[in-house]
Image (cartoon, rainbow, N blue to C red; front, side, top):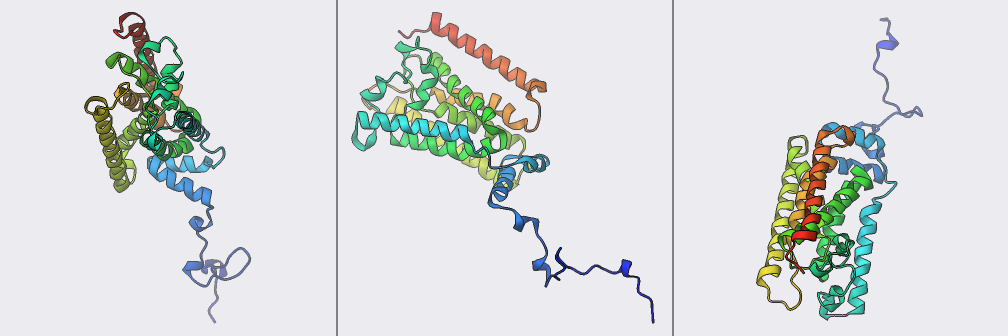
Length: 298
């Protein structure tokens, strides 16, 4: 009888308790053993990061803490909208009327000496369509971004877009008022758009095309609506500026791109970070000087 070398034999397909698997479908599968949180983060990594960074993200990914910044800022914006809608009720809850224009939060050219208005205008919205559009987009884009890049980075990009929007409006549309969080939303979109374009080859091609087209379609339609409301519509009341959209998306495509493309890297050692920060600060200084000495607004 021929001797059989047990060590050279193929091992029996058994699990750790010694039970034999009945077939390939019973073999252990890491994907099947992932919990809901792990599966969610796996999907987020495919959407938000190039392939070489996904493994590093998944190693440290967890659902805690949750995306606090985007959730809290959305709740605050919704609460302010409900307050003004109930306090000054309009038809269909359209609050573009005396209620918001007398608010200490709205940006108005004649009140620009009250510096907090350059940021606080993001809490006040012109109507149901305005706030629903902003909330939906910032939640859809902001939550995945915050899960990957955490709240500090997303908060910095969002607020830089809000400030850039109001400063740009004060320069290029100095007689118009400003409400809404579109500057922050467009900053998130601009940063994500640049990241998707630059890392297009490393991401899933079909999803990359879908992401880029979705952003282009949304931005184009929203710009069109804002342009119509500013220059074509004959609605009574103060004219609302749309320049904040431009300021927000420029901030997102510069500062947002640096933050969102520098995953797992030290920003302080990235020359792009300092270039964008210095450029942003210089633009802010110019806008402040313009508003103090050169603005034609009252």
